Image 1: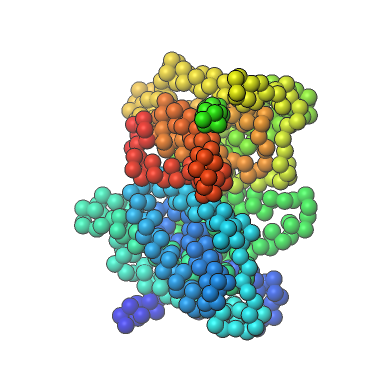
Image 2: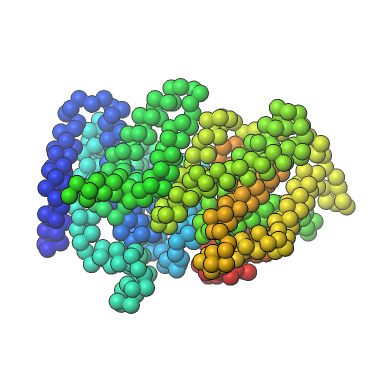
Length: 332
Length: 296
C-alpha cells in the first residue's frame, strides 16, 4: 500500500510539471476521439510503445549510468514467446505475455551475471554482442521461421483473449494503460532504495561499495527490471503487428533507438524517455514517410537523426530535459 | 585435412586484413580511451573511394590505394577537429553515443550518395586471377590484401616504436598528464591518433574492395570483428591486436569447415560471425586485459 501511494505521489515535482502531466493525460485519453487519421494513430501507438521501452532502459541506462545497447534481444524474447505460443499451442496473450516476461527475466539474470563484471566501453560492446548472438540464432532457427519470421493466426475481431482487434483504438488504449503502469512504476522506482543505490553507483562506484552496496547485484536487478519492461513491449508488438521477424524485433537499430530516445530526452529523469520518444518517433515517422516519397532522398531522415545525436552528445549530454532544467536554473 | 589447411591459410590472409582494421581502432582507443563506433564506416568510405577512383578514373584498384588512405586520414582528422574534440568535455556515455551518431551519419550519408546497391569491382589487374600451390588455390587479390596489410601494419608499428612522434603517442597513451608535463601536446597527439586510425582503415578498405562487395552497412560487421580483435589482443596493445587479428581470421574461416566435418547444421557458415561475437563476450568477461594487454 505504501508503495502504491509512493507511485501515485508526484508532489515533489513543480507545479508546472504536474500541470503539464495532467493536460497531457487528458490529451492521451481523448486522443482517439479527436478524429486523427490512422497514420497519426499509429504514430501515437509507436510513441507510447517507445516511451515504455525508454522508461525501462532508464532504470539501468539512466539511473544506473550503464550504457546498455542490447535491449532489442528482450523485445525479441517477449515478441517471440507470444508469437510462438500462439501459433503452436494457441495460448492466449494474457498467459504467454507473462511467460515471455519471465523468460526475459531469467535470461537477463543469466546474461547479467557475467555482463556486470564489465564497465564502460567493454560493457557497451558486450551488450551489443549478446544481442547480435541471439539475433543470429533466431535468424537461423528454422523452428521459429528463421529469417522469414512468424505470422500470427488471425482470430475473429475483437478478441480480448488473444488481443486482436481491427480498430487501432483498442490497441491504443491497451498500450496507454501499459504506459501509465510503467510511469507509476518509474515514479516509485526513482524514490526506491534501489533507485538511490543506482544513482550512488553512477556517481561514484567506489564510494558506493564502501557504504556496503552490492554494486553488481544492484546493476543486475536494474538490468532485469529494464528487460521485463521491454519484453512486455515486445509482446505488444507481436499482437499489434501480427507478424514478427528477427530484423523487426531484434535488430541493433532497435536497441539503439531505445537507448537514444531516453538519452536524447534526458536520462535519469522521469520525463526524459517520454520527451525523447515524443520528439523522435514523430520525427522518424513523418520524415520517413515524407522523404520516402522522394526517391533521391533515401537515408536523409536518418542523417538528420544522426546529426541530432551528435549535436546533443557534444553540447548537452543530459538531453532535452537537461536543456529545460538549465533554462529554468537561469530564470531563477 | 586439406580443407582444414586451406581454411587455415585463407584465415591467415583474412586475419592480416582484420588486424589492419583493428589497428586503427586500437590506436585511437589506446591514446584517447574512446571507442570509435564509426570505424567500420571509415572502412566503408575507404572502400567507396577506391571503388569510384578506379571506376571513374580507370585506375587499377590497387593503385587507388593512396586515395583511400588519404580519404581515411582526412576523415579521421575532420572527425577529430570538428566533432570528437567537443565530445571530450562530456561524460563517457556521451562519447559513446557521439561516435555512434557519427557512425549512423556516415552510413546514411553513403546511402544517400551511393544508394543501397551492392557494388563490386569487375576489372583490375588481380581481380579474378588465382594461382595454385600444390592442392591449394589462392585468389591473387587476397594474397595482395594480406601482404599489403602486413606491410601497412609493419609501417605503423615501426612508426610508433622508432620515431619520436610515435613514442610521444605511446607516452600519451600511458599517462596523458605526465606526457603533457613533458611538453607533449595532448591535442596534437589525439589528432595524430585519429589520422593514423583513419588512414590505416582507409587502406584496409582499399584492399578489401578488390574482393568484397561494398554497401552502406558493410561497416557494422567489420567494426564488430575489430572490437573482438581489440578485446582479444588487449585494449591498447599493438602487438596483441596483430595476433588477435590472425586468430579471429583463422577462427572465422575454420569454423564452417569444422561444421562440415562434424556434419552439424548448428556449426554452419551462418554462425561464423556469431562465434566472433561470442569470443568477444567470453574474452572480456574472463580476461579483460586480453591476451597481451596492459590496459585495464
